[in-house]
Image 1: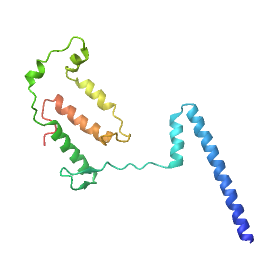
Image 2 (image 1 turned 45 degrees about the vertical axis):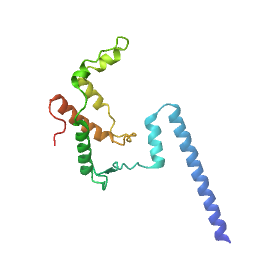
Image 3 (image 1 turned 135 degrees about the vertical axis):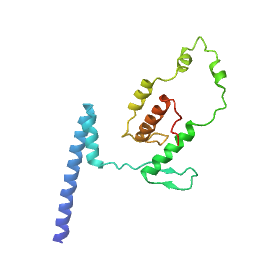
Image 4 (image 1 turned 90 degrees about the vertical axis):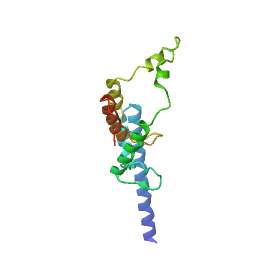
Length: 164
């Protein structure tokens, strides 16, 4: 029938238009990649795939029973986790650690004995990227930065870390 013929013709034109758009977009993206223009390259990719939704990491309560969903609850849970992690009693004898001989052939171990300076810690924290996807530890950069600043302040103020 005439309707089916017209519909097929319109669908064919539409397919051709879509294919042409994809060819142009692919050529444009390839050109950005060839010029090492990362900004426009990723902007073009975003145009195709749309915005990325950032969901907070899934975190369980300390007993592992309930899934925390509220950002404030998640933040408090991470704070408690780091408090427990960093304030554990140690079995190591401080005297034994300080009396270990530093091997002559490995100077790296000697430099590792030196405590980190406030500036080194600050530089490391400032280099944490907040907008990146969490790595294998699943800890978002924004949280690491926040906790890192708290730890830095507590460490260099000579007070217990995250006293709760």
